[in-house]
Amino acid sequence: KLRAGRYYRWTHDRIMDLAISNVPDDALCALRFEVGSTLFNALNEVELEEVIFTVANLVNSGGRSVLGSLEGSRRLQLARLNLLAARRAVEQSAFNSAARYANAGVELLPNRRRWKDPSKELMLE
Image (cartoon, rainbow, N blue to C red; front, side, top):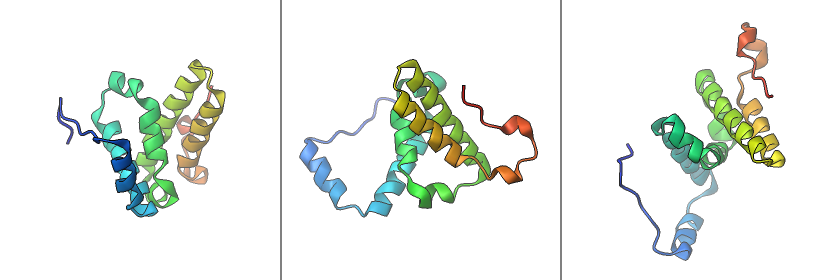
């Protein structure tokens, strides 16, 4: 769990780069996803808004193996996270980023053929 006032910091970027380079790609994707998920679960709405792009990028970097194994309700939560990031990007006129977040959100949606409730449709404005 995250504790208020505690954080870790690398003493130098090169040390961080070296540490990360020794982690296998699939493990690094899973780690990024886990960090993003932890932040998503721990932050309140105001805090999340401040770091929405970081959290969405971490979650989205989980790769197909991690994201593909998620259950439907969790996929829907993460699709909504991407929708929030897309809307925020549009507000900042970052349209390419907005499209990337929107596409990631749509990819996370459960199989549409299984949906029986049309109110669960993801609508992008």
